[in-house]
Image 1 (spheres, rainbow, N blue to C red):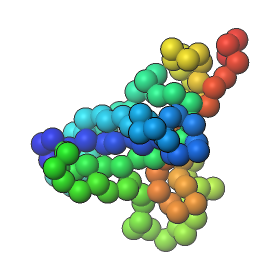
Image 2: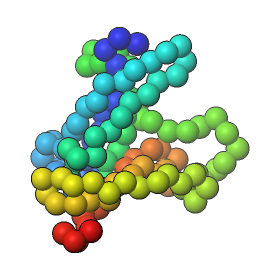
Image 3: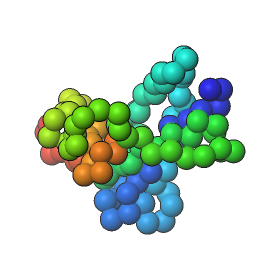
Length: 117
């Protein structure tokens, strides 16, 4: 869908500036037929918890929480794990990666590391 974006929202209380509304980032989505993809630049995120949303029609359309629903796995968090990446940011080195929440929604964490990491 032309104009589609993925939206990363800092979770209030999870760090990343979610309380003041400054914790929102958008990335472009590419789509082909029924599949879509996007890349999250971890370097641009401050430490905290970020929830992932899809805006299939950009600003004008609905906002849909990214989740996995069409399978037989009731609790995805311990079953589906993703690798974490270590990157350097203006705030220092961090480790970042996606995970499934208790509600089977997709989020990511950005955790600070020691400067020697």
